[in-house]
Image (cartoon, rainbow over all chains, first blue to last red; front, side, top):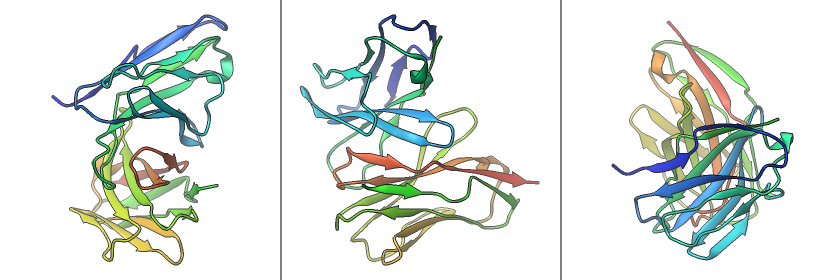
Amino acid sequence: EAQVTQNPRYLITVTGKKLTVTCSQNMNHEYMSWYRQDPGLGLRQIYYSMNVEVTDKGDVPEGYKVSRKEKRNFPLILESPSPNQTSLYFCASSPGTGTNQPQHFGDGTRLSIL
Amino acid sequence: AQKITQTQPGMFVQEKEAVTLDCTYDTSDPSYGLFWYKQPSSGEMIFLIYQGSYDQQNATEGRYSLNFQKARKSANLVISASQLGDSAMYFCALDRDNYGQNFVFGPGTRLSVLP
């Protein structure tokens, strides 16, 4: 089954404790992105990647890191999480083969930073 | 900067009636794409419909159609014959360079379908 898998689905942690949210897709997609969703703001792009070792900042990259060492994986790293990073996070991928290709989204990761 | 505006935080519609969800966008690029996604209460993001800036005709997908007015920079979603299962958040998104990688989303509209 074609899918984008995020882990964990839920996480409660404390300020300053490094965490990683993993994202993996099995569709051989070129493009991958991370978003955060906050009430009244919709989804805001954090980082995106066009291919292995190629990443770029989205609209809200501060406090986040990403890496794309393999095509299928695109982890999101919070080196020193803070309460304002409490949010619902989505990973997404798209083929990169056409302009009308929709993104496929993971099920989301709900992070609470205390 | 490119931006998406959805001016209706919440909408109600009677079952079986049609409803229009508004979306206006701001971009200076001549090539762009517009997407609509549905997010039910379970949280997943479901792709509904796509419109390219150079498409001559309005996009349609089943009960969904897109009223694309390029000069007004609007891309309103029309849902015909609403069903209870249409109750959800709806997001309009702009593919800023039409490469399928760099998106900006609107704040969303919560649609409630009444029986």
